[in-house]
Image (cartoon, rainbow, N blue to C red):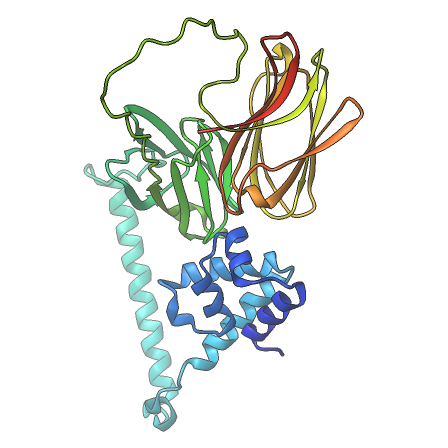
Length: 371
């Protein structure tokens, strides 16, 4: 049987992955990836983290997670020393008949005690009432981080920018299911997810599963929540204000929050276009078709390598992406295809692709980065 670390390293090297690439796409720190391949298990803060990271890393490499967990348990068993006392222990001096009599007497005592307690519980006026089902609890997050055990139906209230947002532990089964303002989320042991509470395209909260058992969901789940605060833009320095030039601004000019703009098409008339996305790695991607009454609402999915997505729009599309280099984007329209540069590696991007009318009456299809 191949060693656990050799199996992981061989699979990674065959695929040509680096630790940095794997860490970016699985959210597992490189120090933990290296510790798994060198079987340096003392690097992990607890066995729950180790098992979760091992399962996620194995599935990412296309290996059978159950086989990897079996390899790990075999290593742990081999590492357990046999106490010298057990090797030198002599047989019990008590005859078998005495041991059997002691067992029978103990069993009779336990049975009698059980019957006595059962009768007193039923007949006594002050008998204890069996507890009913646990009521869901509402927990307030009153700091930048929170770690505690939650059960199905529990809710967590998170304050953010003078507003309150709620997350619910909606189900505990094969995975931990969370209801969030940005849609449902599923987590396995050792996984971490990013949540956009106020739907502005930026991560506000990180949630990770510290301890969870699929075979015993009644034991709840130990979650860690960390607020991911985004610093506000600095206010402009005070100074003299000059009167603006008297020239009317066009009614349909691009928003002032655009940080970068790329002209895709120019035309006398706006026409439908397709935004085509090819995913090169793991990426959380959201999109919303703009100014179309029958297509309102946001869409969100977690995409993997080789996934493709096509979005048709009449006026525009707003997109959110967790890693700009995990995908390739191009616009198809008017018989032409134009590739877009949406951002740098590891960059979170919010952008609009939309038609804008110029002062001269012509239309431009723009890619506008939003702050």
